[in-house]
Length: 88
Image 1 (cartoon, rainbow, N blue to C red):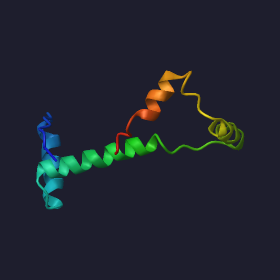
Image 2 (tube, rainbow, N blue to C red; image 1 turned 90 degrees about the horizontal axis):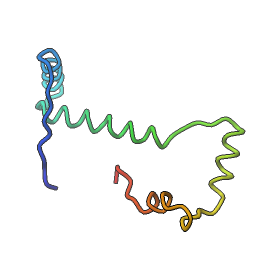
Image 3 (cartoon, rainbow, N blue to C red; image 1 turned 90 degrees about the vertical axis):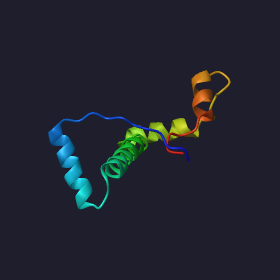
Image 4 (spheres, rainbow, N blue to C red; image 1 turned 180 degrees about the vertical axis):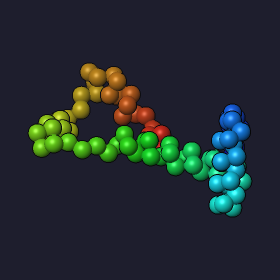
C-alpha cells in the first residue's frame, strides 16, 4: 500500500500532550496519531450503522426493508447500492 503525507497543525500544549501519550505507549507521534485517528474514524462510521428504534418505528423500518428496492426509478438508490463502503 502506498503511503501519503498528512499535515496537521497543533499548538505546543496539544503537541506535548500527544508526544507524552505516544511515548507512554512506545510509539512515535505519527504512529500514535494515525492509530487514534483511525480508531475515531471507525467509531464515527460504525455509529452511522447502529441505531435504536422504538417498537412502532422498528415495525415501519422492517416493513420498508421488506419492500423490493426500485432502483430503476430511484437513481440515488442505484448509486448508493453501487458504491463501496468507506471502511472496505
